[in-house]
Structures are given as C-alpha cells and as structure tokens.
Image (cartoon, rainbow, N blue to C red; front, side):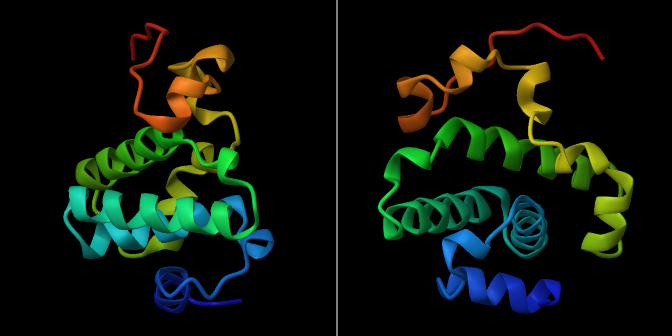
Length: 130
C-alpha cells in the first residue's frame, strides 16, 4: 500500500493501472492534490489524469466531468472548513466520501449520468437544505 505522497506521485505519473485505482484512492489523491495545489490547478490536474486513465483502458465514457468537479468541490470545501493533519484524519472525519452515491443528495441519477454531465459540468437538480 502506497502512502499518500507516493500515491499522488504515482497517480500524476500515470503509473497506477486503472483497475487498481479504487474509490478510496480517488479520495486520497483528491485530498493530496487539494492540499498541494490551488483549487483550479488541482482540479485541472486531477481531471486530466482521470480522463487519461479512462482512455488508457479503452473506456473514455467512464469519465464524468460533473462527478469530478462536484466531488473535488465537496472535498475542497470540507478541507477549507476544518484543518486536517493528514488524509487519514480527513477520511476518518468524512466517511460519507467513501460512499459511492454521496452526490445523490444533490443530483438525480438521470442528471449526473447524462451525456451532458460527462462532457461538461452541470449544476445539481435537487434542492437540499443543510
């Protein structure tokens, strides 16, 4: 198992085979990128690498820009509201990020899985009050 720094380096170098890159790894890399880079730079780097990984296994349709932007935004907001010492502390405090349908509070399945959502960011279609 790679530590957070090595995972980030391997991700950016495209050294992790897509089938070995699990949901928890997505969260860890997103956290590490947002900790290292400003939001827009982290977003661009993360999105580009995820898209390249999907294309490398012949599945470009798996890449979804809306999921990527929304997910990174939620992580960035939580990081900005509470200071975490490391990714493990962040994960312990935010277990809902490991739930595959976390974005369903804001997006219907139809909206987030639409062809439009794959190619560009679309706003949520559910109204929530926190």
